[in-house]
Amino acid sequence: MNFTDFNFDQRLLDGLYSMGYDKPTPIQELAIPLIVENKDLIACAQTGTGKTAAYLLPILSKIVQTETRNLNTLIIAPTRELAQQIDQQVEGFAYFLGISSISIYGGTDGAAFDQQKKAMREGADIIIATPGRLLAMLTSAGKVDMSTLKHLVLDEADRMLDMGFNDDIMRIINYLPTDRQTVLFSATMPPKIRTLANKILKNPEQINIALSKPAAGILQQAFMVYDAQKIALVKHILTEKEHNSVIIFAGTKEKVKELNKELQRSKLSIKAFHSDLEQSEREDIMRAFKNKEVQILIGTDILSRGIDVDGISLVINFDVPPDPEDYIHRIGRTARAESTGTAITFINQKDQRRFFSIENLIGAEVPKLPLPTFLGEAPLYQPEVKEHRPFNDFKKNNGFKKKPKGVNHHTNHPTTHHSKPQ
Ligand code: AMP
Image 1: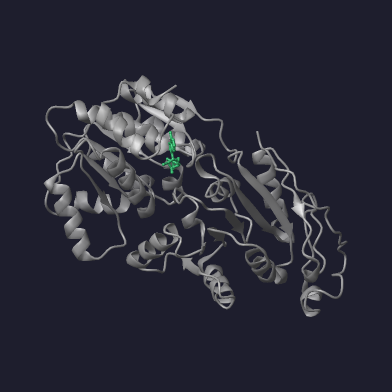
Image 2 (image 1 turned 90 degrees about the vertical axis):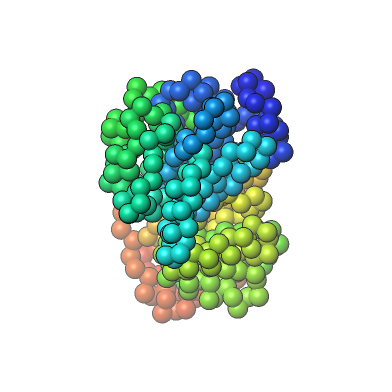
């Protein structure tokens, strides 16, 4: 199938070709005709599948054909980074179409709030917004007219519910006309998404892009480690060979800061990305990372969804993510749009049952690599064992000399095969 099969306006085709799009991805093949036909839609698709274009292209195609131009589409996304990225994609696709968009998100100062509100009142074809800020706009003085709205898109709906935006979304929907088309994209389909969908969609079509599987181009590997070995291991991986662009995920922002401090000493080009930074700092860091001025980014799961940076060659999970789905989102930062990349996860004893759930979810065993010998012995991967003893003995011995009591060590066999989840 080709993009020409959708009867898109030539200027829209020119825009997407100039962005390097050649053929539609599976989610685009399925979603575009349904959205063009004005059907409500629930689509289960991760980032990396081309989901953004799957809803933007048919909507842009419809906007081009409308005679009176006013606010047409509202896209709600969980984070400002994702909102900005969607906005950039609209700009690219709509380059030859003269369709306008604005993004509305929090974390900016009062002046920016007023500017965003002014832009919203002056009008645009498409508004891309995070729920909290949009609701603040809709409920503050000075009416924003939503009555002309034809399309509502909820992007990464599961993430928005995880972030506690359910009530905000429901309140926003009260401001929207009921005869709209609603499209919901979500990486996962837990029952709460179904409940939301039942409330706000009408007879939706459903698409499921065989998900919960990482892209085939990702080489997945793991190391069993004690916590005390993690920093040395991460330094080893980063310096052993050159990596273009690396993301390191850690469980909390405190850990992100701590790891950043440790790694700054190694003269690598590194930045930490966390929610304590000002919006402008976050934007500067992200820009520098995209431009490859910064080689390594350390962050929490705030980085794991939707961040669209090409050419990330390595993702390191300093901790096993608590939610198996987050593993897929984290490692999905590499190997985007059919390129290849490596994802390495550090598993301590406490996290091995979590990692086992991840392997269950992806339907594949991730090879456990042997630790470099200078790091000493690694704990054994025994996810079936419920309780693991604390490693005070190990810590007392500075990590490497004496076996912790009650634990058998072994060295895993090296393996080079690609884990290929189906
Ligand atoms: P998304 O799933 O929307 O986050 O998209 C993932 C990446 O794939 C983005 O960099 C898109 O620009 C890119 N992409 C999406 N669709 C296509 C396509 N049909 N051809 C080439 N690249 C695409």
